[in-house]
Image (cartoon, rainbow, N blue to C red; front, top):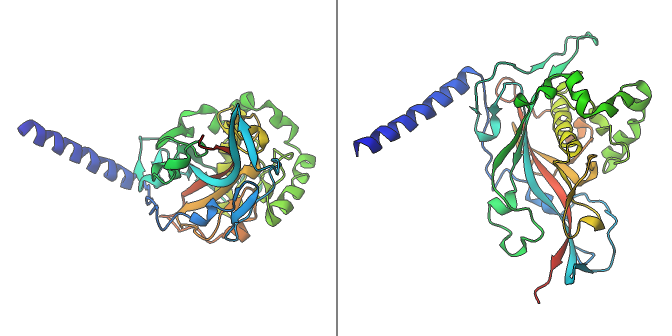
Length: 330
C-alpha cells in the first residue's frame, strides 16, 4: 500500500513539474472538445455509387474516378464511395516542444525558440516556427466507423514527427539535401507563376501541377521552418503546416488518397497532392463552419484568429479526401 501511495505521489509530482515547466516556457493551449470543436460538416460531400448523398454546402472537386458505381478490388466487388476524413493534427509553435493540442504542456525541454518578426525591413523580416505532425484518425478514435473500416484509416494517437529533432528544418542549406529542386523555384518567375494557384484556391481548390506553390500563402520551398514573415501570423502558420505535408510527401511518408488508382489502397507519392487536403483550425479558435483548402487567402479564412500571448501557436485538424471501393458483403 505504501509503495502504491509513493508511486501515485511521484506521478503527481511529475505532472506538477510538467505543468510548471510549461508555464515557465509560456506554452499555452487547450485540448479540443471533440463534439463541439470539430467541423462535422467537413465529412461532406459524401458520394456513394457516383451519387451525392449529402453536401451541406461543403466544397468538393472531381477526382477523376469512373462514374460506374461498381468497382473491384481483386475479385471482390464493391461500390465506389468518396468522403473527407479527419486523419492528422498539425501543431505550429514558437516554443520548442510546446503542445497546444495537449492543453499547453511541454513535451520536452527545448532551447531554440521560434520567432516572428515584422519590423518593416524586407531584408530582416522573417519568421521561424516548429511543426509537430500527429496521427489522429478521429473517426476511428471516436469509434464512429466500425462497419466501414475498409475505407477509413485505423490507428491511434501518435506524435509522428517533431521538427525540433530534424536539423534540416532549422537550416535551409541542410534542407536542400532533401529537396534540391528548390533551386528551380527560388526565383521571381517561379513565384509569379503562383498567382493562378492563389486565384483558383480562392475560388475552390489549388492547382496540383504548381506543386511548389501554396496558393496565396507563399512558397512551399524550402522544406524548413524559415520564411519571410507576413503581416498575418495565421497565414504563416498555414504555410508551415503545408510545408510539413509537402515534406512528408517528398520523403514518401504521406499517401495519395484520391483517384481511381487509390480506390483499393492508398500509396505514397513524392509530390504533395494539394487538392486532397483541407485544414480546420482547432486552436486558438475552433473553426466549425467549414474547412480551408490549401492556399486560400487568410482574409477569407479569418485573419482575426490570433490571441496575443496565449494564442500565438496554432493547431490544425487535417481533413483528407478519400476515394474508396467499399467491399460488399458476399
